[in-house]
Length: 233
Image 1 (cartoon, one colour):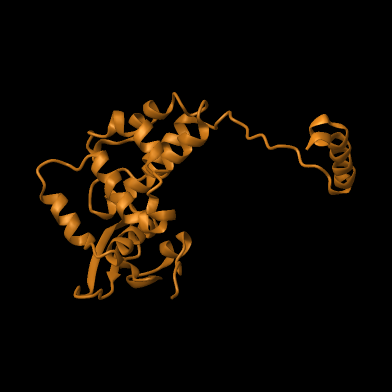
Image 2 (image 1 turned 90 degrees about the vertical axis):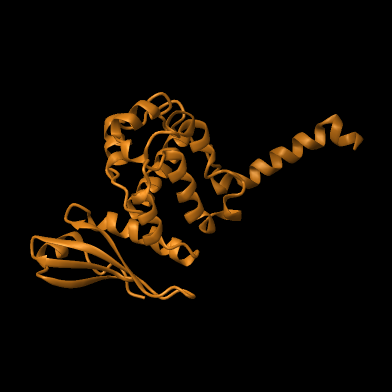
C-alpha cells in the first residue's frame, strides 16, 4: 500500500481537490491556501467504511495528520471506533484527564509492544514522573510550561527516563488529538526547546581491538592457571 506520497512543499503547491497521502489519508483543499485532513477507515468486521476529519491544513501539519491517522487506524483495527470515541469525549461535561488519555494511548499501542507492555516498561516512567503530578489535570490544559516544570528536575539527572516519559507524553497528546480534543500538539517540541540540550553524555565501555584479542585470552588463561582456585578445582 502506497503511503507518504505528499511532503510539505507539495502540500503548499497543490490546488483545490482531494489529494492522497496514502493508507486512506487525504488532504482535501477547497483552494490552494486552505484545506482539511480526512482519513478513510476501511470496512472492519461489521463496521462500515468511515471518514474521519483530522483537522484543518495548514494548522495541522502533514506529520501531525499522519500521527493522528496512525492512532485512528490502530484503534480501528482493535475494534474501537475512533469517531464514536471522539464524539463521546465531546459530549462529556468534563474534559478527559491526562491519566485517562495515557491509559487510552497505552491500550491503542500495546499490541505493538513486547508482551503487549505487560512488563510495565512503557508505563513505568509515566507512573513515576507524570501521573502523580499531572494525572488529574485535563489533557487540554497541558502545555510546554507545565511540562517544563515537571521535567526540569530530571532532565539532566535522569536523562534517559526523562526522554522516554516526554516521548510517551507526545504520543498521548497525539492520541487525544485523534479523538478530537483540543490539545497542543507542539507542547513537547516546545518543552524540549525550553529545557535545552541534555548535559548527560553516554559513555560506552571501550572495545578491545580484534588484533589484541588472542593476547588478551592468553593473559586470562595464564592468570587462571596460576591461581589457587584454578589448581584446586
